[in-house]
Length: 201
Image (cartoon, rainbow, N blue to C red; front, side, top):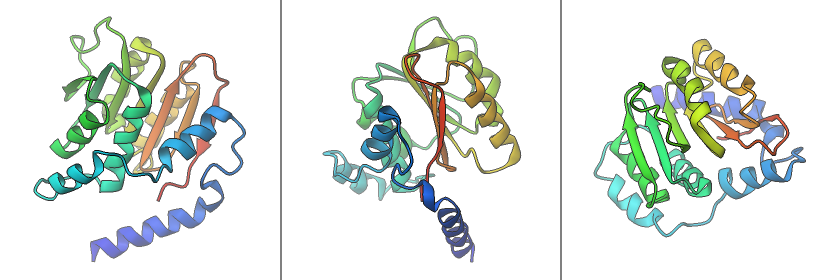
């Protein structure tokens, strides 16, 4: 009974966001390339097949489509150091690791002072942004120019949406994408500030 409700909710969201699909109306080359080359990328990466087989015997908290999106995002970021904040399944961690094998991942339940060192961070994945928003705002000061913050569940409830709006309003965040299930915040100083709603089903 729960699954049809979720599917109906997703279908309704898809209809509402229909005109925001596949980069239509986006004029920025950077934003268009992220949408077409990362979010909507449909090619098969070398790691997809073994990861698919491995995940069958492990408990995942995200859809396979979502874990693959995270794989592509960290791969696209070319991150050398990444921070993963909040409860995250071993499956998602494996996808992040395989997406950028040379990246050093720090996994933490909360952004404490010892995590927020002076070392530059290139990529961050945050589960439940509203619980960690103050730490994430401090983290933006330690992100590299061109860094990416990915947050999960920005459309789930009012507190999550408010936290996302606070992050998007930060001057260091130049280009942001609202996928409803996820928010992407790019910190790249050369870019004009812009925000895009994407129909991510």
